[in-house]
Length: 398
Image (cartoon, rainbow, N blue to C red; front, side):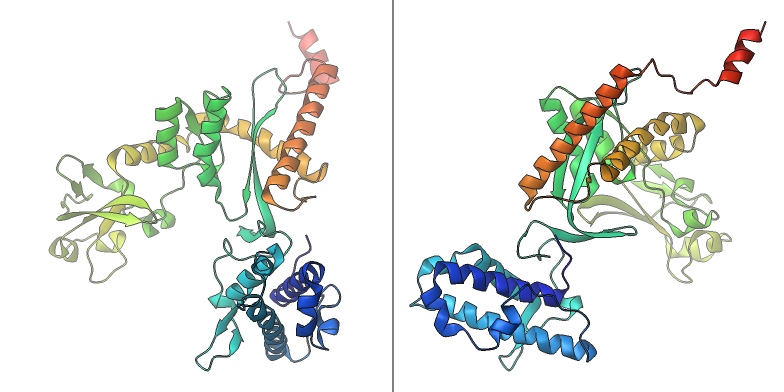
């Protein structure tokens, strides 16, 4: 799927609707056609940089907008056969116009500013694949889908992909963790330990994996983002003792919190403990505790079970033993890299989520065939290849 600018998107969406209507109801469409439409929409819409800057882009976009609105108004007229409104490209035209245009107070159709667009999960990037959405992850931006591979990592056995999930690009990795476990359980393929990257793990996911499936979820839990933890100085959350029975928090100087409030932040429950202004105002360590000159310190923590899981994992992942256990996850990165470079995992050959998922499954199947073939044809592998000189030294050793 080629990448379209917003201007190209509305132009190509209008063209696709006109082409579909020309096939379905040419006699109905013919009276609506204006002389300029052949030039604007007769061929694939490709628009480079327009002279005149943003004003020229807006003018061209509103030109497309008026043309599309004329078609939509006619399609929803009482005398129009109802089946024309149900044509796929006509419905896509209607939705794209809702996404990119609005009516001003004078009743004129206007081009939306980029900051006024709906979320990427709702709007389309192409009239030919409405499942593909724009997404940015760290330094990578793309329009399309996400795929999630789960691979075995048993000693002395080939590493095989046992689960493939495909979602629209705006679905975050952590939303798939529970689904992957549930589907692996249905196929009796659950591992005793599931090693994942930081995008798939949270204290709540760790707790559910153990409680529902008996799976140990291993991965780096997000670090404390407080200003004190980032600076590496002062009193971060770990410096405070929590009295869960009395719903209080005790600071390093011995002061006790005076309030305990339940908060809901992005669908997650937190417990906020706030200290008294009098205690914080006179504290000699105030500068190491809070950047505020007037307000008292407060901290927000997860409920007890999740807080304890979070604290334990943050401590463990700093140890050398944990790092050695987690190092095995590098295997799936190699598998993904291999599938990106050889079968072209990041380039969908089909349109739509369902067909793209089939491609991902077939790609994983081809990867498994290669892995099994290499494993059968190769000699017994060891973790580290023995060189000729090293073997000679070993033989000469007493």
